[in-house]
Every structure is written in C-alpha cells, then in structure tokens.
Image 1 (cartoon, rainbow, N blue to C red):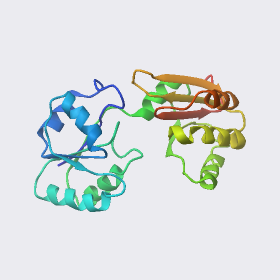
Image 2: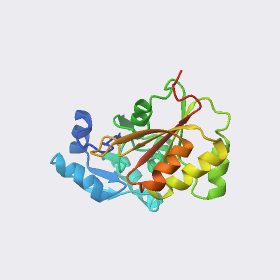
Image 3: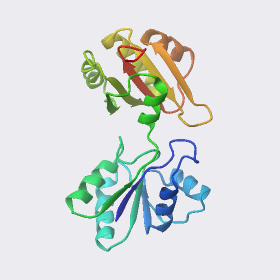
Image 4: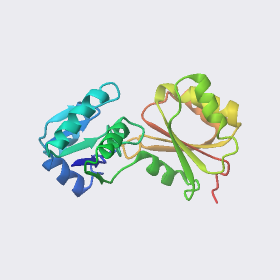
Length: 224
C-alpha cells in the first residue's frame, strides 16, 4: 500500500492522529528532504527508514518504490510540507502507482493553499490554483495574461527571491489589482497582508521577502 500522508506546513502540532499512526507502521517513508522529515519524525518519536524522493531523482526512485509495493511493503509518501502531489514530484509517483493498479490511500491534512484562501477573506466558493508560476519571465507573463478576465480567486505559490519581480509583473499585466500575500503560515511569524499591487511592491521593496509565500488575487477584495 502507498500512503499519501499530509504533514504540517509549519506548526508540528498540525498533524493528524491517523498520519502519526501510518508513519509509525510503514516499512519506509519516501520524502523530498530527509532532514526536514527527520525533524518531524523525531518530534513524534517515529523511527523509520527514509528514502529521498525529489524532482531530480524521482524516475529512479519511482521504480524502487513500485518494486517495494509489489513485494507487499507499505510505503508512505510525504512532501516537505502539506499534502504530497500538490506542486511537488509526488504527482508522478501517484500516477505510476495508479497505472500499476496498486493500492493507494490518502491521509488528509494541511495544505497551504487552503489555509491561505481561508485567511485571505477573498471569495472561497470558486477558485483556481496555479502552483508555482513559470520561472522564465516570458512564460510567467503569459501565465499572468490568462488571469485578466478571471472572476475566481487565483492562488499560487512564490519563493522569496522571486516575489518582488512577480509582484511587478502582476502590476504590469493585471493593473493595480487587489492582492493578498500570506507568508509563513501556521509558523511563529505568520503574516497575512492585504494590498493593492502597487502597495505590495512598495512594501516588499522596503522589507526583504522572507519565508514561504501564498499569493491570492481577486477583482473584488470585499468578496461576494
């Protein structure tokens, strides 16, 4: 059985009893960053072998995990934080396991995009999630162009070193739109900022972006 296990996005207490139970009983845990996962396991006194599984070794690791599953071993897949398969290499393994007609089970839990959406105050009944925008400027601008006539709340992730550049491009492509920026969700320095695009640019020009960011855009900041 492959278990897709959601883990905390910041606060280590945000884990389900079921997740702890599964992580304690599997044969090994496939994870993006063994150091990060070790911190979580150590906190809950869980001792299990860890197998690194990330974007640049996933093809090799998928074969290893499939072999283990066919040998009737139980494997847990975790990401660095949140629900595996959402903007991380877990989706490739999930598709392969389904294609091999092997058993799969999801242990639900934290997801940064949903925490950000609820905290934003923006309309929640209809939204789209774009993951990370493309790294290359041209592709990123084309992605933003698609949001011009979007009436749903748009959610995407961004890294601190690209945040300011992305905000400038949002202003250039979408105008001085309403924007919510959530950072370090569930952590000590959690912050949710509600701006116009111009204000966001000024703020992060004066204050160096730090942490993990969820960006949300909607044409009507007051919601519906």
